[in-house]
Image (tube, rainbow, N blue to C red; front, side, top):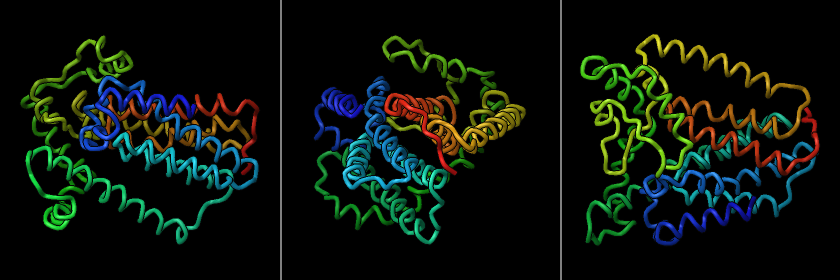
Length: 319
């Protein structure tokens, strides 16, 4: 899996002008990776394999070796180059939950400072790098360096950048209520069709477009698009009844996932499947369907497949 992951990263970089060109355009990784979902899946195998081995050591009642921690850190560093901070946050959340289940919960006073530090680095540090690259792209020929950008622009932009990326759900839902059904009709499940064609390679995938007004509002172009909350997507499809029905089934689904995680004994791959699914629910609520569900499926399916091929014997998970 490590070899496949490294090979996928190599091909991904080669298709986009090499690793240097890729790193210089982290703000455009979403556009550069379009149509390369299967390469992304194989690249994520780097972290799937590392997490599986760490979890296996914990279920054996042993501590992961220093070499294994280094391998995990290196895999996360490579995955970070994909440009999606979500992959890192999801992996660390999974490790925290796995440890709490098979060993013991970590005290808040121990894990709290680390969570805050990692959150600051991912949200503000990595985000500032991507915003600087966007600034350079939109101002060709500028001679403003990264340090000057941080001092002159980045600090003052932080509140707005944070709100636009992490606290814009209410505003977006208000936009949806304003245009549907006044300016655009309900989509009546078109998002399901978009989800069904998602696994088809991009060159062969038939287009399934939303209403032009909805598309223009939530996909303004320029390589940028909004993360649409699940409640918003449900409303656009079927109105308020759709929000209620989707919320009910999501709650019903979560009861099943909790039951899977809480089983006294089960195989490690099944435990990792349950943990990965539980961690993806907040991401699904924030990013909606089809994008959030498609990326979530990559995480859940990948975590199980990689673990199933590595762990060939039944390993009871102690409680």
